[in-house]
Length: 276
Ligand SMILES: NC(=O)c1ccc[n+]([C@@H]2O[C@H](COP(=O)([O-])OP(=O)(O)OC[C@H]3O[C@@H](n4cnc5c(N)ncnc54)[C@H](OP(=O)(O)O)[C@@H]3O)[C@@H](O)[C@H]2O)c1
Figure 1 (cartoon, rainbow, N blue to C red):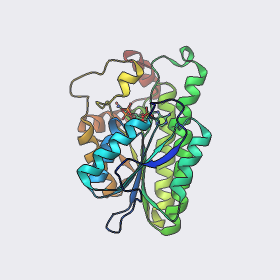
Figure 2: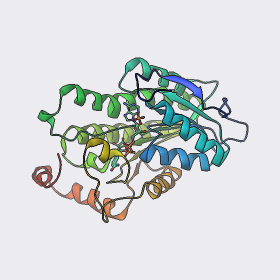
Figure 3: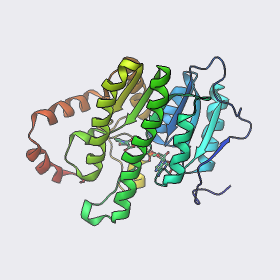
Figure 4: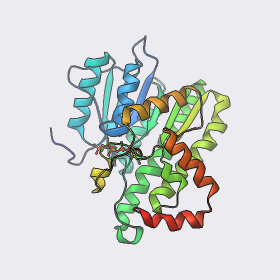
């Protein structure tokens, strides 16, 4: 099976894995995008530990099958894999269709897939910028729409949109995209809460995943760097409490509070201290 070669949004159960999610004792099926690495993989593990059957989405089919096998053997849940590049509108549409299926309802949607770009705005290829916008915003909007329709109709469901503390900072198009995720999620939280649906924007700070390595940036160390399993445990605790925002880590709660007190013009000057 080839890796990352023109994935085509194929749905399949991993070998030796039950192919019908939502067994009778399941708390419901959870669909996680970007489930093969980092925060998404940690969400998949944590949700499987809670007994959720899963639909895992990412581009790398082989890695998806490995994660499916791991979760099935460790937690006994049913796992379906859906290989899709969320930049590709036809492949994204296959994921939307799966999310909206009423016969096999998705009770929890985690919009997590994402990546960043190393260079500043004018130094990036515009198509790379477009692809980032497609994954960070368009996929989140379209999958949320598919989920919220079905969830509001049945009166239950949970959507977690993985944003970033960068949403509170003026740090280029990545921040702008995450600010969209925050604004949309907060609005949806209030709009659909009365219809039984919880929407939470998760705003991580620096977290030890593959994100920085994929971007070509050396990950850092020290107190600003969060452990991914702790991050997801804190996030799920906030989701359980029905919060609109989850900002794991005392250091990041303090940073976000500070950004609200400091004028944007000053924050913009401070961005020169790090990557834009
Ligand atoms: N790590 C941090 O410091 C940090 C901080 C704040 C926010 N975040 C946010 O957290 C989320 C997860 O990031 P992470 O740190 O866990 O990154 P990661 O370890 O690099 O994992 C990214 C995941 O997204 C998938 N993915 C990437 N592009 C995709 C595409 N076009 N279509 C489908 N799947 C795609 C990857 O799988 P494939 O390559 O197989 O597709 C992988 O499973 C992102 O939204 C990111 O912006 C991260």
